[in-house]
Every structure is written in structure tokens, then in C-alpha cells.
Image (cartoon, rainbow, N blue to C red):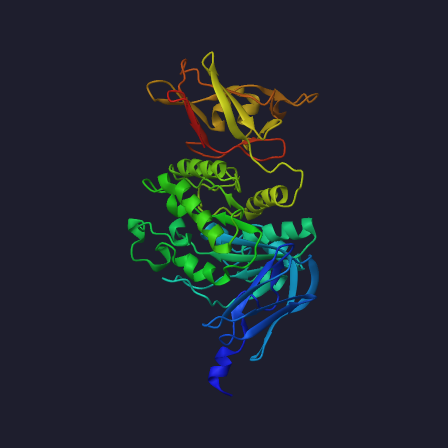
Length: 478
């Protein structure tokens, strides 16, 4: 057989392989290669579309919006030069999960410090053939790549226990698949210890000095290698867990800007100006700079109308930058998708500071996304002695800038429960914070010192994240 004909024969692009998931209820982009100028027809079930390959042999078309279906059917591209088929293709919801190591931690694997704590149990008993993931395994590239070896894998024990299934993506996908009752596909693109700049398409920022010369850390290189081959696959949105490599002193200050560049670039690449990004705020791991990048993340979420933040300040491990509870991360990300994209009438947002005032030497704080408060402190210290609410993470300072641990007022016991240890609810939704050492407070901050762990929750158990207030300039952040 003529080798030139083999090369020119019609092909489907990298993402369209056996077991693929197509996005429902949107025009579905399909593309590939064929002989230059050749007419190409793509069929899927009763849907059909035609186009012609350009002078380079590239072709692209759009199938009409499809209804969700668990029935695996062939996606076929046909031309005079032959045909290409992806078998067992289903229709449902498609997302991208991207970031660095915490997004890449496997559901289960050999290392006890690099796997989900429930993965071994859940992986044995889960059989969800219509929750499928595709790992994007290309290396970094100086220019955008077109090809990638992509294999769609179902959420079955063989895959879930293999070390290849990503924990956050798996929990997120399983939650959506079961709740929506439609197939779910997740593209997974993660590399440990990588900075955000390498995931930004067409990024022209200089690399961080410590990353200079490291291929997978250079601007745009991982987007070019891993993500470009699936552009412009039709997806619902993306979830993101990254920031540890941008949390250093002198680096975190630009993170909000970089997040805007990231999602603006991905939206342009995928042709969706409203592409949502739901992302995990960093959990504490013992670094004193983390609260600052957490506030940068919160600022970006407040500025972008299609972004939402999953606060996980209660899920960290001060001995490990890779906390092993990935289920809570994925569930909080899934809440945003279910409310914003699928119309569920649920609470998805953590409490967010909305306004404040100083009254009689005390900060009075009001929040959005909270109807009632609960306080959970694992050692229960404040339950027997309300003065020990200084353990809960608030600090205040006066004009001299000296910080003191602050108390939280309004605490009460559960109604009709005599036991003192069941204190933990707060009267009203306004928080009252003060320190006896600071009669004239000017500044307040929350979760800016050890143990950096949040213990204030709204009525559905979503925690308040770090924030700070400076009355001298009448501003707040985080």
C-alpha cells in the first residue's frame, strides 16, 4: 500500500478515540485530517455534517447539538480515502481538570502520601462505565502540538486502583454522573510543582528565576504540549487546582493577574467566552505566605463572573503539602457546577466578607452566603472556656501594627442541650471580634497565622476562608 495514501487517509483528531464523551446540548466540534481538498462526512447516530479538507489536509466541522445518551455509538469520519471510527462514544457532560500535583494525586497508588485516603475502598467497589477520564500525557512543547495518545478509561476498579485515575477529577466526575444521571467525561492535565505561567496559552511573561531553563516550567509550554491537542473540543468548563508553585514571596502578588490570563487564554482557545473555571483555594501546609495567595485567589473569583472558589482551608495538613482528602475538594467544586451550570437550587459558596464596622473597640463583620454559623474546633477548647476562641484564627492590631489573637463573641449552646461541650453555634450572622489588648483596633486578619486552619462554617458546612481588613485605608481583601 502506498505510504503517502496511508498518511493522507482520513483521520479523527486525537481526542476522538474509543470511549470518548461528547458534550450534550451544544454544537460539537469534530476535526481531523484527510487528503487536501477532500470532502469529509462525519456521522454519529442520526447526526451528520460535511466539510472539505483545506490545502494542508486539515478539516473541522460541527455536529448539531446532541441529547445525552448512555448508548455507546460509533463516531465515523468518511471520505474517498477511507474512514476513521471511534467506537462506544456517549453523550453527556465534558470537563477539563488541570493544575499541579494536588490535582494530579491519584485516587489510589503505592505511596501513602500521594493518594486519596478513601481511594482503596472506593476503587474496589465502583463500576461506573459512563464516568470516563482521559489523561493528557504529552510532555511540554515550545509550540502547540496537534497529536497526543489519548485513551478514554471508565471508572472501573482496574483503572481506579492503577495509580492513573486522578482523585479530584474522579470524585468530581462521579458526583456529576450520579447527580445528573448522564455520562461524564474528564480530560486530566496535571504536572507536579508547575507554575501557572506554563499553563497560560501565548504567555509572554518571563519565567520565574528558579524555573529558567526548565522546559515544563517555561511560559505556555504545558498548554502547548498537553492542552493544545484537544483544542477546540466542546466542553462545559474546567476545574483548576494550582498555586503552590506561585506562593513564594515576591511571586504570589501577581497571582490574580495570572488567573485572569489563564482563563482568558483558555476561553479564547476553546471559543467560549463564558467558559467557567471552578478552582480550589490552596489548603494550608505550614507556609506563612499561603494566606496571601489565598486572598489573591479570592480576589480573582470576585472579579470574574464565571469563576467560583472552593474554600478548603479546613482540609490542609501542616505536615504535608498534599492533603489526602480529595473528596471534599471535588465535592465543593461540584457544588459550583451543579448550581451555576445545571440549575440546582443549592448553597455552593463559602461565607464571604461583605461589610464591616468598628463599634466600641470591636470589629462587627457581615458576610454573604451565610444564614447561620457553626464553629468546629477539634479539641473543643473554646466550648468550656469562651476566652479560648482566640484559637479560631482571628487577630487584630491597633495603630502600632502589633497583632494579638482575638476573641469571637456571640457563641451559644444548642437549645435544650445541657452539656457545655455542645456550644458552637453563633447568635445571628454578624461576627463580633475583639482583643482586650487592642482597645482601638485598626486592622483585622483571619487565618494568617498558625495553624491557618478554618473552623467557621455556614449552614451547609462550607468554611469561611482567609481575609484581612485595614481600617486605615477602609479596605478589605480576601
